[in-house]
Length: 414
Image 1 (spheres, rainbow, N blue to C red):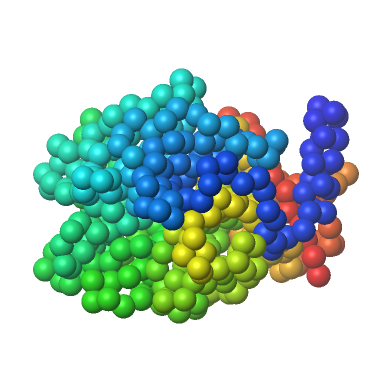
Image 2: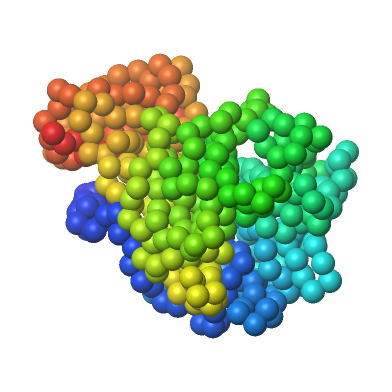
């Protein structure tokens, strides 16, 4: 126990000394330039594949990135056709690739990748067995949250483009369900778009920007609550209208980066759902880029490939370490908890995947292991007052009738 505690404090010290709100170059993906590819993250490794090069060739290769060794290893080729403009996500320890465009046209097939067997399996095609059929599409956006993922919008070959919102739940016999259209609009409403971006925070899906059927760059952003199947508009993206950008979330904040509004961009903006506003943060380390891909490991974001301002496809990758004011996320016994803002001043919010029970309690300990706060958890997420605590490092733990269910760290500053 003592060894584990010392190791934990050592790792914590290293993490706190790392530079924040910065991009750093990592190993190039050894494939030459590529854009309109896909990426996902499963069990400690990021995966990237498919896409097109500057000559218009389509690919079906796939590669795994190991952050611990900063190296890429080729894995099993994708079992579907070579393609571009597909979407990808990870659920329950597997990666998924859906839709896209190959040399024959638009696609609606769905494939899963199992890292344990290094193999691909065909799944139910998008919309298969649903009461609403789905046509092939490209340029859609995939957003994962909790144990679900959502495929939004895209191009289906028509003039009005798509505003559909498809939910995938691999645990069901019929995995696809058509949910409410983006912005709650009806099928007859002209609101379709492609090349948008999104992220998820606290089991809510956020989608915005993109290029609309009316040929304009959008900057509106919408939040989707899948529990009630409803969309709510939130603050417009402060970077202005654009498409072909990347989106991701870390520590209960969302990010939009890069893209194009006719000119390729490199700026990045952070969305705070509590304040409903956008803040400019560090620009992408690789310069202006569109058509890139991104995956996260809950602590950092990895972004690469894409198209530069000269139109060339890129092999480069960069890793982003977020600003220390964003929050700190910890995973204990498969319970993911986040404490924000960090460092805390007057208060800190605890949130995450924990399910509160009537016996749930929070204990806050100082670095000497002394309990400085013990209180019942009456609601979740939970607001904790920290204004009376001296500045420094603290550790928290969540207890219930099954003993310890979650633990983490937080920093109090002044």
